[in-house]
Image (cartoon, rainbow, N blue to C red):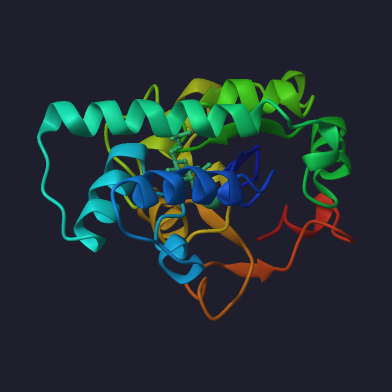
Length: 215
Ligand code: B16
Ligand code: MG
């Protein structure tokens, strides 16, 4: 089927906010008396805020009330937003801006499919929000990737069938979500991790839209 739309994950594909999430979660964990390292942080990529919090508390062998969890998540998000507010267009990952512009020129529709509840602010800070025809994020979905909900809603809001969409993802769970939706998946990162994608690239740099239209 002819490709009509590109659905982009945010963190790790358009911008690297994983380092900000890491700093904010680390601060929280340290305040609770334990630490998280970069290797553990890898397991949080693409995972929703509350699922991340639960994984971190389990890592630290801590059991707390739901009320305390909400307080911790709110404080972590405040710390994270302080870092997000320092972002500028210089934070866009290499090759992304020209790839988005070329997609629009080619008539391909563009949607965001992210677990983040902060995606609108991030897209505004880096100056690419007007390039998106639809934004589906953690505010619209109830099921985290690998559930396909976020991408299915993206296709629906653009008015296209799932089979005519390509998903660009950096997380294993995100590629699984794309496949569960019968979409093509382009992995951004390592083929060792993203082996279930149709194709894996290191970054958008040096790649043109036409390479993906016949996937
Ligand atoms: P927020 P993505 C994900 O973004 C991040 O990878 C993940 O680390 C984060 O916990 C999640 O968004 C929720 O973010 O706290 O801003 O709602 O890769 O799905 O774009
Ligand atoms: Mg991601």
